[in-house]
Image 1 (cartoon, rainbow, N blue to C red):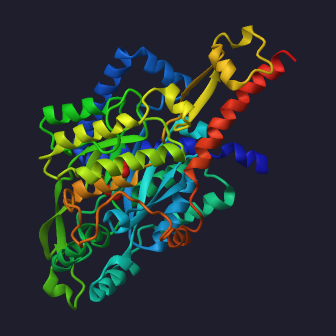
Image 2 (cartoon, rainbow, N blue to C red):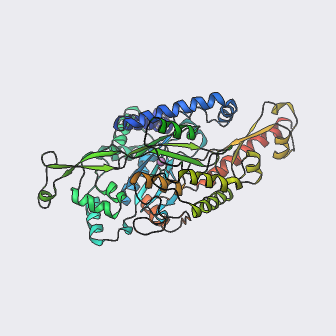
Image 3 (cartoon, protein in one colour):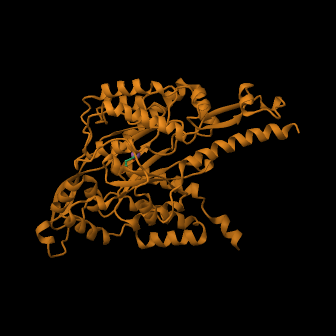
Length: 487
Ligand code: OOG
Ligand code: NI
């Protein structure tokens, strides 16, 4: 009976694929410019594959070619611990786990975050959909009256429907969902992230929340955690950045992350800026003591939060590699911080490129210095020799084993802060944010991780362990091949 049931579960990978597609369709509908961005990305990607057959081969070898056109991430912002707890359960149903902890308060943004994503190779190759998920740090609201007000609003907020919570319960109990349950689940889950053009606070409250921080207003004022952007992956981010401005799309002034390189590392990101959207606010005077009927008595205002982003992913770095990256980025930003209006963009890019000359830029050098992770596989010639007893290095030298970059699947706190800031129009270009906190890139991550994990209900997964394991497994498989073939 148990086995019979098992056969009927829709796989988590399929659920994630469907969810990601449904989210993309909803967002293209809500933000049509996102659809334009997808077209630009498709164009840039096919151009790149045509020009660089070797890139195509590399992607194919590491099982990453098919996912390119599907690949995307999104971002949401949550207001309270229980929301994070249930969001974790929701994403688990579609095979996504919380990986990494990012404390963005140290870069001037009052949130801490994780990325929900698939963690094993097979799942990643089918669909790598990720959601960068932030939880508001209410303890950073200094005004105690406003804090109480925000808390009261959030306590009463319920972002999950009862039927969605039941489906999550069911999936946990059964170990999966059947076809019709899966369809309902996707529909209900996507609904959580839908845009609501009616605020749940009056305009005065919205303004006060916004003055405390625009992010607080974005979370507390609305009925749900609207998806604030989706991000297709590109193989040529410079081309997409260029084509956005060629089409008069209001793009972010600089691409976040490392400079353009022969061997892309980590993650580069850019976006078109957030749109100004009309929002209905319930009328303030009446809402003091009555339940206002929003549709009858409302005020139109504006909110700026939703945008479209694009990303280019490169090789994952080891801790040593990440330290070198952090150090070079700090060095650059100690000299120049990109201004929000783009006025020093060229200068910033020149400085960044200059400083990053110190980051090796061939895969051979990156590998030898153990700065990056690689996926090892057999070449076509592998079965023609007796490689028994030979070391990995010898096998590479002889041309029987090849190595290809393991793609970075995670995020970068300083880049994330840059994305937040350019889309909230706060702080960027200053060394301090609106609260006078220093916007630097010396990221310390221990501080509030325990609180975050308590809210989440589990510990976050260590990304380095995942990359390490992936690399080691590929090495073991290669060596095993040579040691069993001729024994
Ligand atoms: C998240 C910003 C961070 C990224 O790609 O680094 C992010 C947000 O705006 O909520 O999505
Ligand atoms: Ni993003």
